[in-house]
Image 1 (cartoon, rainbow, N blue to C red):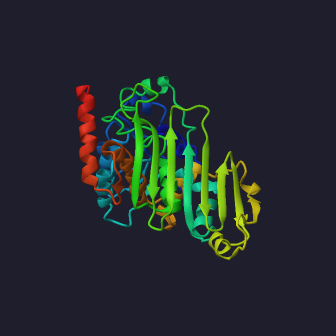
Image 2: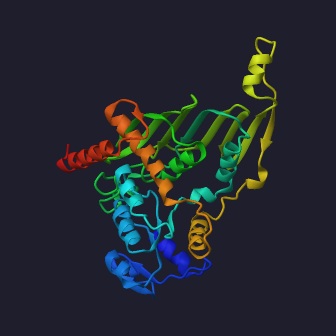
Image 3: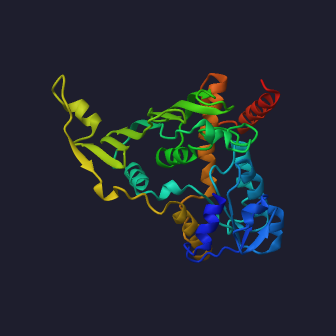
Length: 356
């Protein structure tokens, strides 16, 4: 992803941004670039060569490099997830003391017109009160070769800090909290190495409970084929379904609760309209380029961020709480105690190192 972002900027695709330097501990990765080159992020941050940095490294380094970059007074765009666990998120966010520094996260799915429309329908109140959310995301299939090619860091507690929840699903978890907010409690069943010879979770089913009584089920895996990506939202004013690049709202002619109270039939069916959004078909928005441009515009012109990095703690907390719940076999109340999960993660790292 670092090369992808660097190439996008170097090609002049981000208006107002210039690639001034690149940094990688692997010197070969720097060879294609004709700008200033650094082997450590400390050297880059001290150089004065850049005004802003894009951090696209293995996950644990997002925290340390991010803190150093913020303390150096630079604008920061960090890849997802912003940190591996909630306690590190808190440390990273705490380092953003100068609010004139732009601090953004690469949640590029927030630029997708489908998700933007769903966010709008939820937050405008058009759907009415949410009653149930069900998101099945099983189109993340990964082979054994994918995991074995990760140079020893991928799919390990010490190297990556998690599996499908931390690698594939940060965007989905971010969209979940962006659209529906944070639940009050989470219960989950995670399977570790169920489909692959890995330490971390590759199959997850989570149940979420909201303050208003709404429930949510979140299912994800990298071991199922063919997979699907289906989001279903049951609300007071009907049911919204997004699947196969099609968004459809079965819109009730009256609110469900009103129909329930007033209808004088035993087995009544509430009439609805079938509303689709064909204009969105095939359009997934500017994605990474959109976030890079928004980051640049925020620095140069003060434009509001699409994805403030501070919001990245929510998706990390959701993923952490699912793993914690699975480990303790109980509900996890939110906000989650960040120290509790940090201790669990340290134990998982130690147990993996010991071969247990």
